[in-house]
Length: 179
Image (cartoon, rainbow, N blue to C red; front, side, top):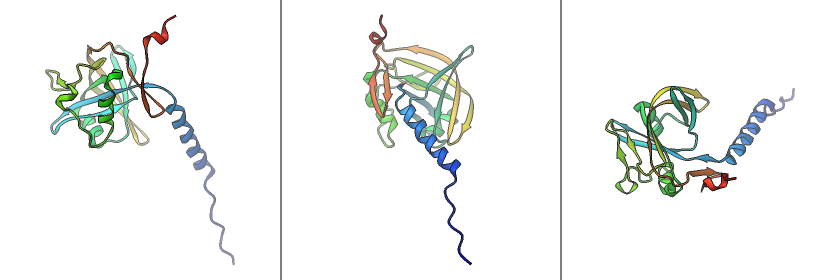
């Protein structure tokens, strides 16, 4: 009797892997604004760089963002409940890099952090800062989508926004949209 031939990879799994690759490639080319999401926890401030921030509703004012795990800074944000979403200007590329890399300096005096009276850290030099309360979360695969109700908005810098596309930072000028 002969040994059965090894099973070929499941076509559905191959199709899903191909789709995942195409999905990543599509969004790698899609420009997105950059934010630092921060919170105050019992163990100190936590924060991370995100390009997944999006408006959801006006009444109540709600935004969304996603995190890829529920540990480390992301876990701290989820546990804190109240967060700040700091929409960065193109002059804040270095702080975006610092909050994107594990072990990089965070919440240093040189970065210019301040705190709301309620304790949440924020960047006064950000284009906009939205103080939020997490309203709900939804697990999707290995990520968690966060819906956060906006409690307060601070307007800051008028410098063009920091953008992220194809693993690089850049800027978007309002002049690009002039007639």
